[in-house]
Image (tube, rainbow, N blue to C red; front, side):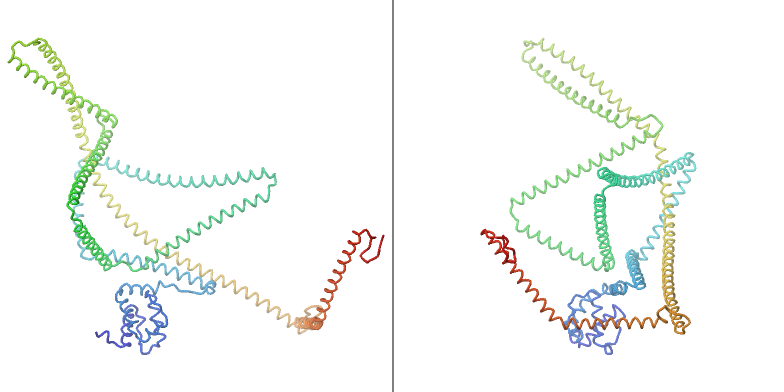
Amino acid sequence: VGFDEKEPYELMECLNRVLVYLDSKHEVDLREEKPEAMYQRMAEFLHILGYQCSYDTEFQHGLLSGDRRTVHPILYWILCNLQQLKKRAYLAKFCMNLELPEEFLREEQVYTVFQSYKELQSQFKATHAHAERERLSRMVPTELQREVVQLDAEREQLSQKIQHLRNRSEKDEGFQMLLKVTSMLRKEQEEEARLSEKLVEQRYQLEATEQLYVERSAKLREMREMQQQDGEGGNADAMLKVLRNDVIKGRAALDRVCKEGEEKLQRLRETDAALSDPPVTQQDIAALDQEIGAMQDEIRAMEQTINASNQDSRLSVYKQQANLVAKKKEAVMKDKKEAEQEHDNLAKELTAKERDYEQSRGHKFMKKEEFKSYAASLRDKSAKFKRLKAELSEARHEVAVLLRTEQILQAKDPTPHGLKETEAMLEKASVEKSQIDKAKGKTLDEISSIVSRINTQLKDKKNKLAPQIKALRSVRQNFQQVEVKYLEKKGAYDQARSAMEAELEKTANDVKQLESEVLESEKNYHQLSMELCSAEGQLQRAHREARCQRKEERHSEDHQTMAEEYAAQITQYDEHCRELRKEQKIVKETHEDNLKQKRAFVQLEKLIGVKLKILKQEFQQQQSLGMGMVDPRGHQTG
């Protein structure tokens, strides 16, 4: 209520205090400031801040009179974006572009100062962006202390582990040799990476050179073909055509490069604009989170509405079935992923084991293809074993059935018909069964012996690889220690390098500035030398003129001094002008008479032409009638 009851002058004072908070240059007394100056100051600052309005006479009148309809929206907009606008006002002092007329930039000194102003502006933008990133990445002191304590504890643990590993490695005789081998391996790997990078670079250069060679060869071939077609001296038109084609290609390439340059400049401007914009604050993130939460609430409410509208029992059954199918599908896909992951892990482990066996000095382990063929043969034998086992179980079941049938038949009739044939068949079946059992037992013995032999070989290889694996673990720990030292030294090197580069850049800037000063001094020196030479020439002419006036020497054969020569020329030109004026006067006076005479002559010429045409027509008519020849003058000739 108190704010609404404020007078216009109080509203303007309130607005001015807000502007002073954003920029201290607005700290002025409104009673002593002129209204036009106040409007210019405030309107310009609001335009820099990005306030959207028309800035017309109505806005000017409302701002000068302190109208609520003009001042209240400005205050509301500024107070809602106070921190961002304060930062924008600070950046506007350095990032606002200074517009200069084109004719001022043609002067070299003004152009040099303007370019240095642009460079300083770009440096300020980069420095401000870096400072903002540092502010955002800055940690709280308590977190830093906690991290320091954690790092100290880790350092103690690492030092204890290192001491323990040193004590263990001192007793191992082959540790130094293993460390030397691993260091040599690391160097060779780095050298290999460097050579591969160099190879890629050389291949790229070779491709570029080959492309250039192909282009030059094609051009040379065209020139030779043109020479052969047009003779030894060649044809100038063909050469000119080729040159024109080259110029067209060059222009197309230049246009393409210019277009790419403009696109990159546009991207650079967009990047500069993005960097100059205020960064996203925690308040903005919280507002976006609130919007996301509100949208999620709306989505849940819509889903509840849809569920309430779809209360059909048949749909619920179908939904339940769909959910069950989806769950089963998810379970199957999960099992599939686990199986694939297990398969990949086993394949990796198998490859690693094979590599370890191949590198060991013991019995050479079979290769991957051999192991696959061996595994396939095992699978075939196991399948054959299962098939034979199934046949055996079926035969046993059949024997049991036959025995039971025999018992039943014996109970009914002690001497049934065909008993001997049945006994013979049973004996034959028992013999075949015994043979099958022997073959199956032999196959099982072979499989068990092969499996036991494989397990024995695996145990032997594991026992042989155990010390090497332990040594490899110790080497990895040493490698981690060396890598930590390397990273520390690399960080120190990068820091020293950045300092040296900054100092070198500063020195280069100083050198560039001194060179520009030297060039400017040389330019001024040459300009003054030219002016001095011109002044000396004029002074010599003045001394010679003075000697001619003193009659010590003569300017020319006709005139004593240069002044007399100029006076004579002026007199001559005046006479010529008078003659030209007389001729002009005569022409003006006789102009009308001459025009009349010209018209009369034109009419006379037309009249004579018409008369000649009539005579020719009469002559043609008389000739066609068979009369005598009549010449154009009317005399009969024949």
